[in-house]
Length: 389
Image (cartoon, rainbow, N blue to C red; front, side, top):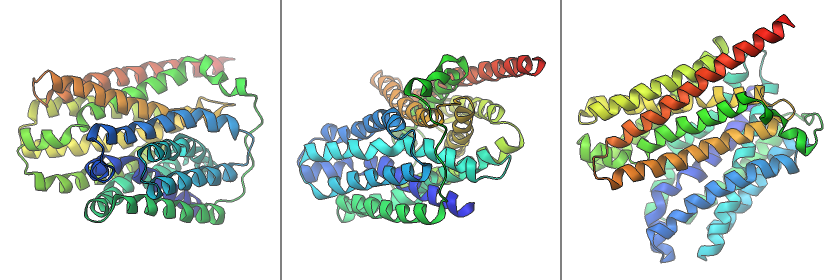
């Protein structure tokens, strides 16, 4: 069981590096391709667009395939995308390659969550999903900083060569460590979306987008906040990012651990409440270096603590369309990231202080928590009715 989950974690590690490394190497790419930073920023948008396109599209195309075959196909697409961006100097080809690289992201998490649940012992489903997600948190802790160093001091193309090779290695271990699993029961395309007729999935998706939006409203601009408001020297930022990555790893583990002992809905609700409080406190105490670091670690830890419970909840509430439900969680994550960063940018344009990105983000988090309060209430009512019947 653990070997199969490790194979899934290898995949999410590669996806995490490919997604998050771009933020740190934009100047290197812009210089190498002789384009502006704004144009280089389109590589981030192209990946996000690939995630949003691939999540529903691949779920529809591969809905009747064996699960291991889907995972292998997704990693092949990942390898192709990273190979293209590392090999071609042309801006438009590289932009298209980033779009291709993003295509398998959402579906890998969606299918991976289903596989993790099948491999897990009874009652350990959320912990199994969190082990899969651990790959992405380790990518933020170790992979992205190392790749940023390689990109800055040698060549940014080495990063994507590494990602392509990592994808090949992941395919090998998926084939070796994940058993042949039967496909999900055959469902027509219309049936894959049938779960969206109920309010619970919508509440979960909105809550997911709001939680990520709240955190990224602040976290997208954490670098200038730490230097300009908290008073840290620029040389300290890489160390602070390592602390943040470690918090993500710990939060991800705790989210799965607590969900298996309580319930994913309860853990997600309270975790979003902590995000709301910590963002509000960042606004109040950002000028205090110690408080700023502690609250940063709490917030980024909670960001991943809520990830596995939400993924698990969508699977539970998307019967007949599990692949689509699991993929849509990643869609909601990415939409939240984009909306949050945009909202934070609007705050910065007002010139009222970077710390206001945190209080703005706290409003998003509060709304997300209220969505989960509503979700838990609706779930209890439905469960009570079903029990009486």
